[in-house]
Image (cartoon, rainbow, N blue to C red; front, side, top):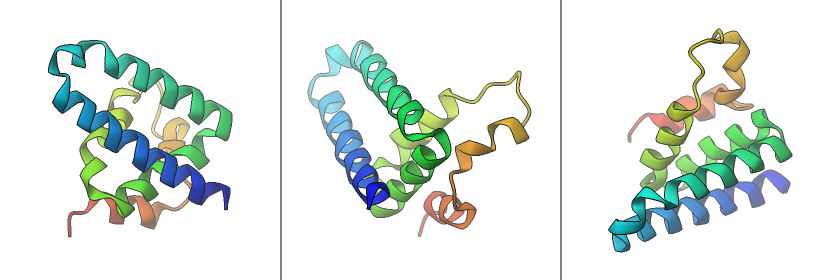
Length: 104
């Protein structure tokens, strides 16, 4: 239940962010930092593996947020850490992650 609510929140939030960036192009230099900070805080609060699982689930539900979600993930990859230390970014279900990234 909580994961479903988190997926819906992420979909709504990233769709809203995408529309705001289109409408308020001049603010696009400021808005992503707030969005990023909020999503990072949410991931720490919910647990990173659960959050990223919900992020990939939201991409599967709404393909229009694939780009902002992917950019969020790519911007948080730490090159100093190994892949094993960052496997939480794949979420809780690897098949879900792969299917959400593969275009239909």
